[in-house]
Image 1 (cartoon, one colour):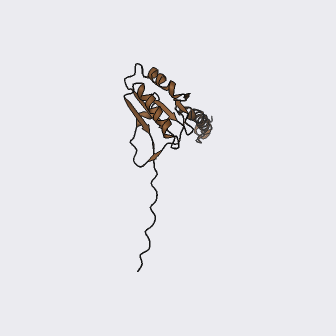
Image 2 (cartoon, rainbow, N blue to C red):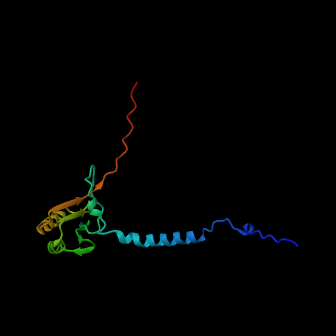
Image 3 (spheres, helix red, strand yellow):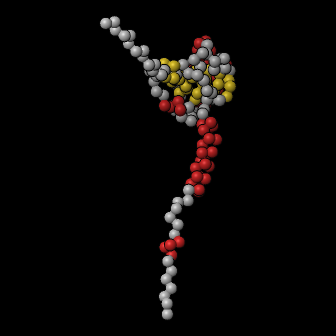
Length: 151
């Protein structure tokens, strides 16, 4: 009588199947590509550059009140276009019931100064406690090499 021996260990496949992982990564990539543009709040402008800006991390919060002044003098409250005359009432409506009465103004570097001042006046008239003017940081320029010394 012969003994039949089964060798189950010989059938085991030790290769890693990466296809499901690649599928999941591609789905995540597509989701992030679609969602990322929606995360921006407020109108995009070219901010004025300063040497040492003060950090305002609260301006990046989702519930931050942003007013933007574009190069051509257009005013945006969040992403909605507004006039300077209507801005005071819109800001007042949004400040009702809020503890933090802070508004951030970001103006294009080439916007006319008078337009920015009128926006600041309109926001102040709404009863804002703090008004933040958003700026960008200048990139440090490489200093030129020293001139050769005349020996």
